[in-house]
Image 1 (cartoon, rainbow, N blue to C red):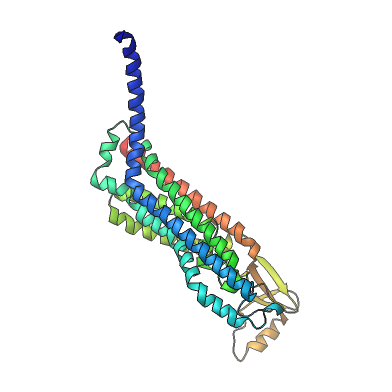
Image 2: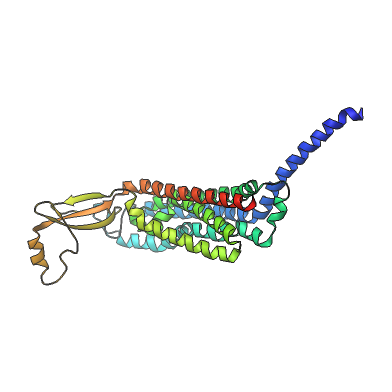
Length: 338
């Protein structure tokens, strides 16, 4: 009787042991990262509540004073005499709004610095990874388990905060808040960009930590690399989509929410004369006459309609870079522990 049931019991024990090993890896990863995960989720909840309160207060002020869409200087007849109300709106709600914006701007760097860089370097520096790799856990499986939880929590947190910021930003209006989509900090805080940049910073920090195997050194290098990449994105952003050139032969200007790249004068033949060709000074008028400038102007700009295409293109580039960095990381881990 016992002989008949023994194989089944042995098989069940083996299945249980296998499940335990799988559960053990996930449990260890959770124990190692639960502080990070709970901290980010707490940040998401606190940030979401703060943005909702801020958004409600801003919407109430705008409705009470009827200044939605009014800038400090506006050509809209409805906005005449509201300069003081707009100034009060900006001084009252500007600090809270900029705080939320700065949080999203800094989130990628903080992710790479405090989550990505120590993720593997701490274990490699202390040698604790050896215990996990000797428990029938392959190096790629170990790496996947280490990366999965931080990546999911970072993506959820960044997406939630970006959605709350977008909701608040839209309620305040670009003109009334003075926070235009094309500003460096504004673009980095809106839409998919902070999510993609945070995942890229996580991948860079993790790869750096694996290669250097020193936590402090990895944090310093990660901060430098993410800073350089952020600066590079700012420099190339205007070239991600072809800009629009608008001629104003009889005067005029583009909307306030257009991202003006450069401008100049129109000649009588319809050619474009960049600003600065005729420098200010005694000979400026003679220079303009020599170039047949007739008083018209032109503007090269990204209209507000370009915001989301530009954001998705930049986010796509960041995600592609994150995928490349992650692939390099997997290859390095496989070669190291093969």
